Length: 190
Image 1 (cartoon, rainbow, N blue to C red):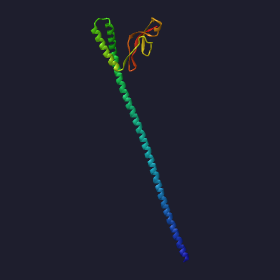
Image 2 (image 1 turned 120 degrees about the vertical axis):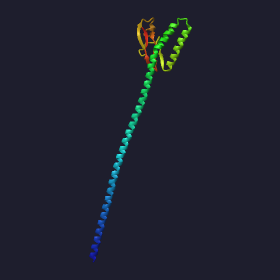
Image 3 (image 1 turned 60 degrees about the vertical axis):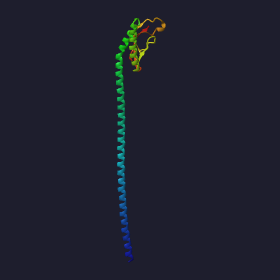
Image 4 (image 1 turned 90 degrees about the horizontal axis):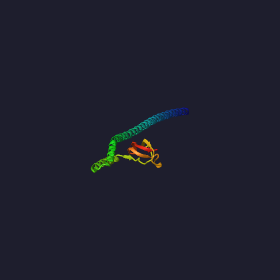
């Protein structure tokens, strides 16, 4: 009997050990499944994070491109408007020249009304063009500068201090907003 009891106890222990082993195996399998699911979740999260970062990068690049396009378009519009204004002002320069010639011719005339009317027209036109950025290039008596002057001819200088300087202005030069639109045609002392 004692042997039967021992055998029964051993069988019970063996059965309990198998049950424990099954439970341990089940627990390990559950842990492995959980770990596998966690790894899959981490992998999906990493993929989604990468995709989000890529999409954000693409969006930022697109916004930067759009800002560049918008700025470039605005600059082109301003350049177009300013070049149109420059063309219009260049077209008015011969009118200014004619007014200057008329004022010079009327200086010797006794007709005060013609003098006053011509100078009034010239001054109004010149004042308006000055508000648009037009400026006269002062040349008479100044040192010859190829950035602003165009030498038509050289003439023997009446004195040593006039050598290399502008003796006479044949055609007035103009700048528009600091940029030369017509060089002053001058006679230079040699």
